Image (cartoon, rainbow, N blue to C red; front, side):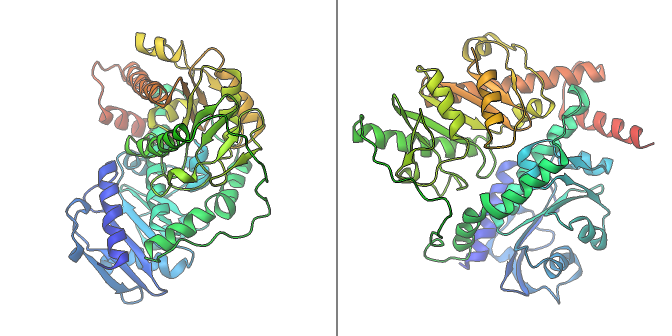
Length: 448
């Protein structure tokens, strides 16, 4: 099977599995400069077969494929497009409003804002200028990327950002990320953070036998010798635990793309962490670097560690009983993180696992001292906290307990949002459609 066709089939299956498709979805990949592979119009992605992925010239594409062909002609930097109808994007597109940067992963992957275009190619091209995604009035969204993985991740992040934006109509206004900081994060993401990962994914999607070779870096790997105080069997076991944790975060939709990171204590002063900017599926146990807890600038083995390793290290250093930590971006936790709302105790299970209410750490740019200090302060006496406009951080005696905590946090946040919706609408039974209608009504009234 052609590699481009195989990639499209794989990501179509993922989109369906994530529940972010409708009836008229279409995805495509650029082939060379003027050719593209695209799914047949009218064929649902859930029913897609190899014969439903067709190759065509972007200059002679038929009318039903013009959105994709015209975008490729206009934007040489785009190699993949997803035209989808995610559940939470639809009400925002119906209201015809702009989503501000409610989460930092949105700022990085989607852009400082996501605007709504009219349902015509000229408006879509104009709205996509300087961005890789837009909403389409009364329909869904168009996302794009350097690779299919990037376009796919953009769909997930945009749907989550839309969810945060819609839910803010019942639980309080989102606290918007400063525009300058949002643009800075976008620039860093495009030029640094994901560059290596996108190169490797491009190689994979194009069927190259090997990933792109490592390029020289201005930041040299520290030459350190770590005196092991643990046995090899434990290290091998924990390397697999870290690998599995990343896959589990993805499979349970607790994170999108390469976002989030996990760590496991290897010894009193050492931990294993996930590396930076690499997708969880492609990671191997050998990729996980060993990081010194008391000085996280010291690391050896594996690939370059996540920039958030200082937060993991600070929590483990302050609390010797903690054996595993998770930073992730679950949907419902992200809603409260974007509104910076302290979650009250929703159940006895939350009280036991989290240790009380879930506080919000002070906002800081990813990888900064301010974010670390805010997270550490909010985690005091707790096993979980929100990271403002960023996500959630959880800690447990081992990875299993850390996952229990993040699951109860997501469940508790969902229950809280349900309660807020019922209070705002005066209804007795929650449905997502109830929240949709309330949001559209509120936004439409404001525009009038």
